[in-house]
Image (cartoon, rainbow, N blue to C red; front, side, top):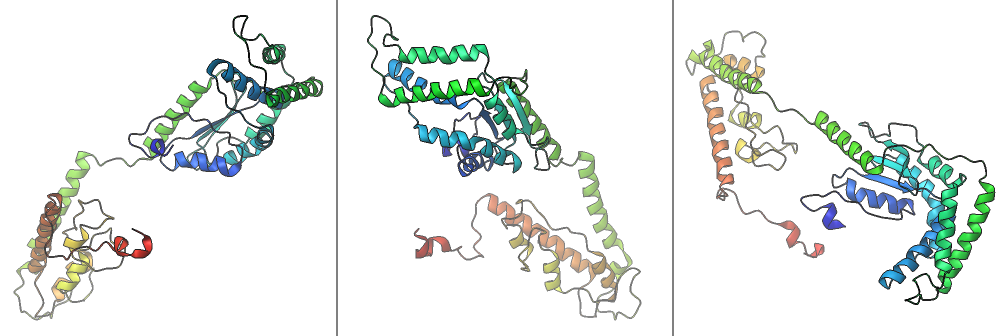
Length: 378
């Protein structure tokens, strides 16, 4: 199943699984949900006599028609049958599936519940009780006739017609049929007057399509919307105006080498202009989380970025305020702006080089430590 779960493109998958244990069921559904699938689980509820007879009927019918059959031992069947209600409750109560259904043997929906945007099921939990109620209800006349008809087929030595001899039933098949008949008779006595769950008019295919459409609509609502052209234009104009205002400010005409004896501008602190090293730190990519003080050239190539990030060219409030109180030997505001613009150009050139897959000769070769470590067995 791995080629379906993690393959590309992904396809809709209908898969059968006994789901007879909690850990099996969780592993099965997580195998799909972890790959981004919308997962739906449907449990077929029926009395154990029908289920047990179904094993013998399926096996012998396949033997008669194809020459081989699939067999499940009675002990395994009984264990799985007993565990199914709790498995369904575990999947539903923990929100491990997007949708859960309980159906009868005709495929009609008896119960359904769906996971909401908060990760919890929307309606009160009821899969376990629905399975038990459907198992314990009194069978209809049509269901009783169907059971007896299947038993008659299996016990008939001429079930394949006069022109073809039918093979005798294997001892295990014959014993399973007898046990199913015994449990069916007991169920008829114990279920008198018991009603089952209400049957929905919605079929499983229709319900699955509705759940899929609902899930897609939910993802569309939660997805971030791209900025409009007007918002993009405002962002670009605001950045350009900020640079223009700094260039035309009174600090830009201040001659270099003049002593900083006047008061700092309003709203700023009287700290010196950051040095070149400080500007490098201030130009780091916002995606950097490791605390390194790297230049724009290095930060634009980090794996945590989108590959198109650029440093903001406008100065922060503390930097613009400190320009008026710069020491005599410090750089002027225009030099700072030129430095930032130069780094922007360098970052763009470095990014263009990476897109052309031109190796950066200023950096040493990257060592693949994982392949050099003999302990990893690579």
